[in-house]
Length: 540
Image (tube, rainbow, N blue to C red; front, side, top):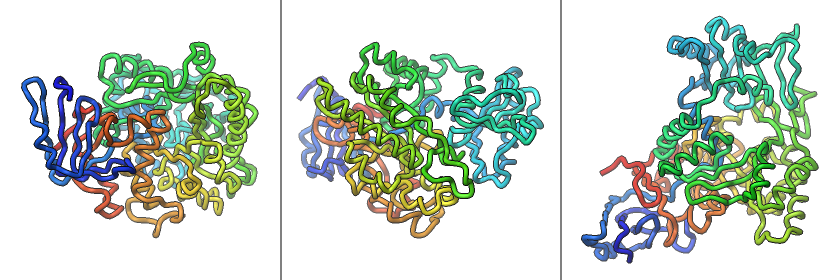
């Protein structure tokens, strides 16, 4: 036993290890940043007495429950940290959102932007807003509000003018500037058209973003999140490196690489998994289609009530292979956003070819851990293909309860394979869960509730939306713990509470296995530990 490392002994608890060989314990011993042992026998407590050189902390759990720290396997850290500082536009009515813009205006300095996120036209009786509505509140300061889906934006006339958007501005490739009957922009921008405004909004410095990330990190830790898979850009990566260098990064981050940086990444010889235990490289991120909310997810058949709308396919199977085969040959895995059934099908066809390229490339000891992000609507022909291709399904259970009404409205009977966790699991597909924050809250207990009930918190619908796609609590917890560790290439050090693994764990006052499903929604950790150190504690 190393006499210089501190020891923490947790005893008299319900410890769920996620290790199938030893699933439940009452005592857990941490030495330094690693787990020394887990046991069902608290009598081992007397073995750990400490000395002048060694600090021993004994924590009586008093029946509390312990799990491995949770991982949000799809989050936008930059957007989420910014969202915490912006207007929360997730309101029940359009007028409530407009009122919040007015409140923010009173606190905004001249020449600054008013920013917000979270509106959802699908729940507003009026549908989409207009630039003129925002102009009545803020005629002089630019206003820009992103939709809950992050696939649409709402701008006032001042913001449109600063971006150079007018009646003669053409739609950019992959995007749409919504226009009225006279061809004048309405203020609503879809997909890549959003970038016309977003590129002129003053961005925080890398140091300022690092501070915002610290604030977001504190929020995530208190939710029980000790690891994230981030899908934001290079500035976020720079800021995370600063925090890591200053030893302020208190969560583990798997950092994706934007497709725009693929040539640079290949040229530098970067590979997925490069980095350290706190910050490491994940996959190259690409987009195959849009989203359900604005009906831009790519479909085989039209959206119901929109006979000419098949969504938008941004990436075909051949384009996927053409654009990424060199990355795959050089050890960079791929993470592709695909929501509609056609987009998923196209990407699976492309991955079939890429897997052949991998097999023919020497130096690959195991298949790259490619993933499809969202996987919201499967075509029946594709049910088994993710597992067959050794693909990871990166999904967000809370999307199902947020989207069920519009999924039924626009996908109709196709929805029996929407957010099809059980179907994919039965095929032995590796499921990992996240939130897509700030699209949804990163609270993993909200995600667990959605996964096991497929209901909103009020208990509707009964017995759950497409109830045959529910999964068990333990299955859902694996999708937040062991499976994301595998996706990150860290399955031999994270995601379980077992000897030799990093000591990342959360403590709950209530046992999720002993309460009703609706009570899981309200669970909050009373303690979070990373690397054997307390990063959040709210009990004696």
